[in-house]
Length: 301
Image 1 (cartoon, rainbow, N blue to C red):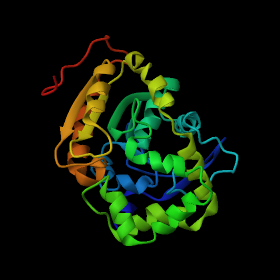
Image 2: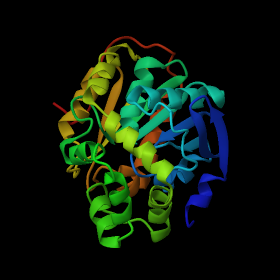
Image 3: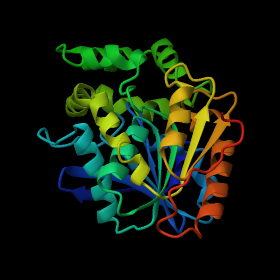
Image 4: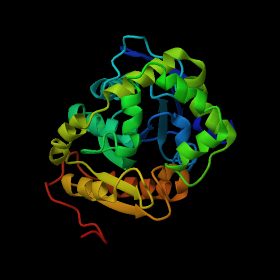
């Protein structure tokens, strides 16, 4: 697939919950990229190559719809189960002082990881994502309730065969339209595999803002560097959540990205990669714990 070969070849790791495919490229301090619902690691294809010269970039395909193989039918894909899956992946790959990068649903999962299993995480980067009361956000609520209707996810998978449906759905999240091959990588597993559709059904039924609100209670205790990169043209995730995240983490910096919707990695990949690289240069020398004090953010009241 054009562009994604620079993410490296697919590998597999067997975890307690099931088998996860991932790709990695580069060497150095580890960065783990966590995607959201109905996509996979190909979401990061335009960001990772700029960072791989200095960092070990690990890009898993989590069981959120664009994944293969499907998880066992009894796998725990609740919010807590998804967070344990990421934590177990870090353990299985034996990575430490990880920079965890999350987008969309993946951002919520990252929040749960640092709330419940922060030991291997040294830094956190959040782009536009579910947080606080907005998991799921209002525009996604129909999908959550639809997941309780038999055949709903299968109907969604069938609808995504048609380009106008794909473009309309993706257009809520990004101004830039990816190549047809990337769309195929995102949606083919959901379309072709009933077991993947069952995974997505469980994830949709499980998302609940009680989990993100509970995770937020741990933010003041996460005294490690946090970078929040938020697209300003996002109709899904409100800008006020970005400000709230910056205020709740003791060591947080907020950067607005003009002209981007939710998927900053799609609309402004060069800007996102540059911000992550700058963030890592500035923070790699910080101690494991830092004083409990906010970091000023220019332009934010």
